[in-house]
Every structure is written in structure tokens, then in C-alpha cells.
Length: 124
View 1: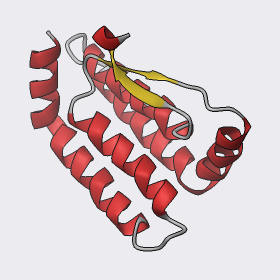
View 2: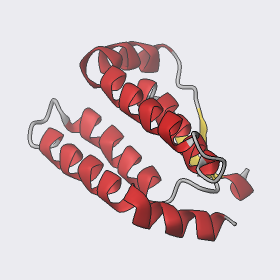
View 3: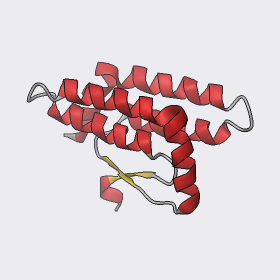
View 4: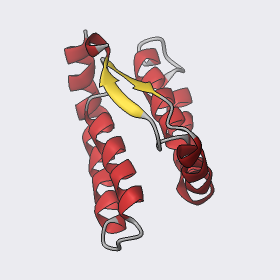
């Protein structure tokens, strides 16, 4: 099921989403100050290619909390809103609910990417 879900996800917007995240990461990495933000964008790009069968572990401590607050102010809130919006759109139909759940996963990661680790469900 994960394979079929990831293939459908890839063709129904996952590739374009990952390409956007990757390009944004490259733009952030132009400056030294933007490299930590760029690394988070690359995390989104990797997850956007194949989100089925992966989960996110949130943590990281005080430095991650401070970085996440700055992230929310400058980029995270808009990313979370857009992912939540597409999640709601996908959940309108019963067939789209699995895709909507993946967008909600991305929305949560959009708010708190620092200190979050993406892992395969079978690896834990």
C-alpha cells in the first residue's frame, strides 16, 4: 500500500512539491546564514517525494524551540496553512483521505521542523 500511495502521490503533485522545496532550499543556502533554513527545506523535499510509510519524531530541546519560533514567524505559518488547506481539500472525498493525512503531516512539520526527525515506520 505504501508503494502505491507514494507512486500516486508522486504523480499527483509530490514531484512538483518536492521540486519547489528543493529550489527554496538552494536559494536559502546561497548565504551562510540561510543554510540551517535550507537544510529544513531539503527535509521537506525528501518527505514530499514519498511521505507514505514515514513518520516524524519531534524533539530537540531548547535550541530547537527557539529556532522553531523564528521559523514560524518567517516561513512556517504560511507553509502550514497551505499544507492544511490542501489536506482539507483532499479529505473532501473518501478516496483522498490518505493524501489529506499526508498533507496534515507536512503541515505539522511545517510548524516545527527544527529538532524533528523523519524516519521509516518499519525502522522504529
